[in-house]
Amino acid sequence: MPVSAVYPHYVTKVERKGRTTDELDEAIGWLTGYDGPALHAHLDAGTTFEDFFAGAHLHPHAARITGVVCGVRVEDIEDPLTQQIRYLDKLVDELAQGRPMTKVLRT
Image (cartoon, rainbow, N blue to C red; front, side, top):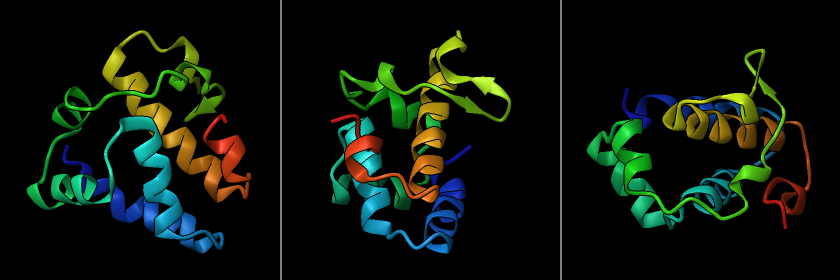
C-alpha cells in the first residue's frame, strides 16, 4: 500500500483536532528522518510503506513509542515493518489527542 493512500487520512485526523500538516510532517520526519521535500517526493511517487521505511533512518528513540493502536500494543509487534507503521499511527494518534510536540517526539 502506498504511503500516499494513507497520508490524507492522517492530515484529516490531525486537522480535525486543530493540529497542522506541518506538525504532522514534523512527527513523520522525526520518526523517519525524511525532511519535508523528501517526504512529499515519496508521496508524489506513490512509494509503498515497505520502501518508505526501508529507506528511512528511524530515530534512535523510536522504541520509546509505546501504547495501543488498533487494540495491539506497538511494543509487542514482532514484524519490523508492521511495528514501524504502527509507530507512525501512534504518533498521529498522539498529535490528534492534543499531546504537546515535545511529548509526541519523545524529547
